[in-house]
Length: 201
Image (tube, rainbow, N blue to C red; front, side):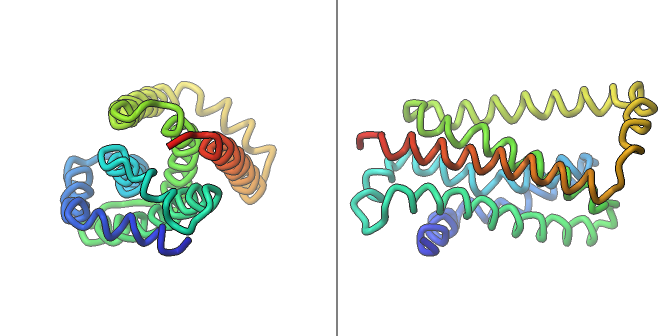
């Protein structure tokens, strides 16, 4: 299964050459750190799906000595590995350009990425080839717009939100959010596995 995770990096050598400029664009444009982390995390996993869509890789993968459960597991575990690597590179770039970021930015970006992946990964197994890239791009733009609108409207609700959160300690809030996000990711993993096992290639 580790070879399946490494495969995405090997196949994306050329695309990875634009990864740093891609991150730097968002940093130099003054994008919020959360958004920069999010777009960086999305780059490799979703590029892999786009590549597989064009090359019809699933036919090849199913001819290899891997079960369909292992193929999907490699996708979900690989997404977490690539996300962690992307966050590390992005943090280094932010430090180099003296841009402020916090662990809260990282935590929010990780949560948003995992939720986004949880919602879109099952769709990749349902949609016909040719539509995946469009759906990912459209979904991301919509989520970004919603995020920006929420961030602008948030000050109106800061007092109410603060009063609610004050009832709980920081560790409880972060732990609760992490449990919910990981539960959503696990459910998505299971759903995608079931769909993939029933697909005909």
